Image (spheres, rainbow, N blue to C red):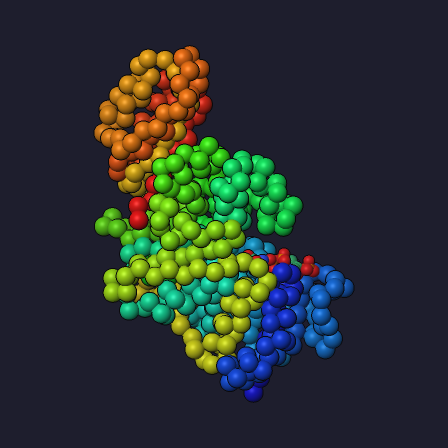
Amino acid sequence: MTLRVGIAGLGTVGAGLLRLLAQNADLLAARAGTPLLVTAISARDRHRDRGMSLAGLRWHDDPTNLASDPDIDVIVELIGGAEGPARALVHAALSAGRPVVTANKALIAVHGGELAALAARTGASLAFEAAVAGGIPVIKALREGLAGNRISRVAGILNGTCNYILTAMTEQARDFAETLAEAQTLGYAEADPSTDIDGIDTAHKLAILAALAFGRPVSFDAVHVEGIRAVSAQDIAYAAELGYRIKLLGIARRIEAGIEARVHPCLLKRTNPIARVDGVFNAVVAEGDFVGRVMLEGRGAGAGPTASAVAADLIDLARGRTTPAWGVAEADLLHRPDVPMAAHTGPYYLRLSVVDRPGVIADVAAVLRDHGISLESMLQRGRSEGEAVPIVLVTHTTTEAAMQAALAQIARLGAVLEPPALIRIEPE
Ligand SMILES: NC(=O)c1ccc[n+]([C@@H]2O[C@H](COP(=O)([O-])OP(=O)(O)OC[C@H]3O[C@@H](n4cnc5c(N)ncnc54)[C@H](OP(=O)(O)O)[C@@H]3O)[C@@H](O)[C@H]2O)c1
């Protein structure tokens, strides 16, 4: 018996998978208990050089046809996108009762609920280890390795492009736009970087992690999303002075009121292990009631790490190791309320640019006091009467609603010159 694999998409990940399956064929056969053999493929351009011979592999112009190819046991979807050919293929394959392995976080975050339900009805497997944090086996860790725990929090650096940009801004004291342009030149950011830098990619992955961690239906729309465009070199420098580093995190918490899921830049204490995960690396922290805190770190993208995750799913399938996509049966998913961002509580970093004149700080402090917000510390640099000066404030724990209301009022004060910069501080 051989596990016959059909691959749709031969780009970065697809070509990486072909290489891995060829290079480690013996090892994989031993671990899978059977050889893994690619029999059919699909991509847009049949004549593009994929860096290896595709001789002997059946070519499908339409990837959906892989779903009905009788010489395939498992379909690997590596096209990408929440809609279009990727969704059509996965839907067709699962409808036909055929197992699917995918790296497609957008598809799983947006349609993972209905696709998993479809898979459960037809008895097919839907596996997506490669969809979150590339080579880091975080899906398996949450769904299987930590299955004995009630998870209270899962958080992570889930986008290598953002982490690369923030790290470069920190190390080189450079601004966002300049650093993004360099990241694009070096191939660490896409020509259209918005999915990454606006936090959407992180939110896709967080939605998946939250569903697995808390056994609830996957819900991309429930994630509050902010990206890193507004992070400035100035804020990174002030944060450093205060003992913090700035990272884009995806954070999901189970609290009394329900599930909170949010993506935004955070100030993290320099001593926090996740604050030291730099460059294109990803990391995920999970907190369980019996295990305590677990942190996984590694490469979150790229041909090799992503192919590594796809291969693990293929071996599971070959061995017959299957679990429901979300770790529990459809009927056992818990429908807990989504906690809105306005109800978030925590400390905040606030930077204002104000005209240096008597009474300004007292006015700002009065607005904060009126909203029940107390200050932990304040930095003021470079006094020069009548000129613009920055003031940095760190608050004690307050609510997002109070902070936003205070901020709107502060922005209207005559002495406040630019829109204030607000960054949430993530406690240890
Ligand atoms: N790149 C990473 O590091 C990474 C990491 C984790 C997860 N992922 C996920 O893995 C998936 C693939 O990403 P990638 O970076 O490998 O993408 P990619 O390099 O852009 O490759 C996409 C592939 O899909 C093919 N394709 C596009 N439209 C098609 C259609 N209508 N019919 C048939 N084939 C079609 C393309 O064909 P042509 O080559 O002929 O144009 C290409 O081979 C995405 O879901 C992505 O989110 C990627």
